[in-house]
Image (cartoon, rainbow, N blue to C red):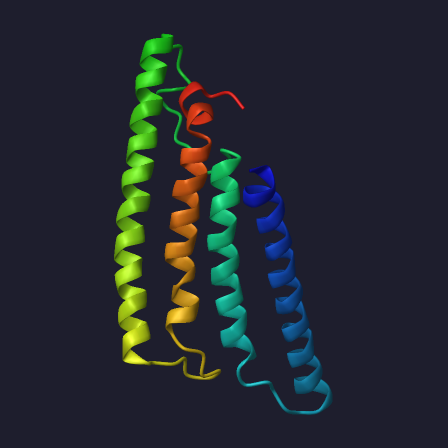
Length: 155
């Protein structure tokens, strides 16, 4: 599973970053050497960034490296209290991800059905927005795969 949730996302993130750097470099050369900007470059860079963030969410969740408020769990608590806090954390995490997944799928469906496209690049609006349900769905899956690690705080 580490390949699915760590190695593969990191390769995808690297490819997205490489594509972004290539587009940005080409835009700089086109603008300052040839005096013509690539009009769609900035918009595509934003879309690549959005996809990168939401692909990265799954990897961060799998590795348990996301932002974690540990005010209570860092204190000296009994193992039972710690387990109860971890169960609550997992429950809230799953509920939030599930809510975002359902809502974002609805938005992506509306965008797909409307046929709207981005202003500069003409990319269908549902494509960059599809990163949101993909990211939250993968985060939920990563959490469920690593459920024992989340509950016991052991890798």
